[in-house]
Amino acid sequence: MNIDVKVDDAEVRRNLGKLTDKMKKAMEEGMKDLIVDIANTVIKVHPWKTRTGNNSRSIRYEVKDLTASVFSTSGYGGYLETGTATAPAFPYFKPAIDRHLPTLGQHIKEHL
Image (cartoon, rainbow, N blue to C red):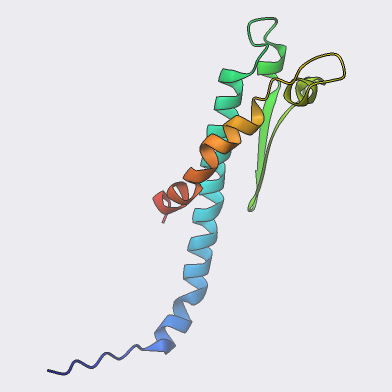
């Protein structure tokens, strides 16, 4: 038994732009889903949320193309994450990133 398979690469080439655009859009949407998950986890687990709530309210995120950021605008969020000479570190960004980063592929897949 012999089965011949022929691929019309002309059609593949014609549709490559559509595929690329769809993939880029799925990656952007997946990145947004990921960064929202990370930001929500950061807000839930940060170390000083029972004090004033200022740091919780200061958590922001940005997504532009395939670049995403999650950050604190409180002015001291970084000190909580890394510690100082007189205060211990209370990491809350890194654990959230480590927890959610492996889900990026699934988020992208959901948008394809």
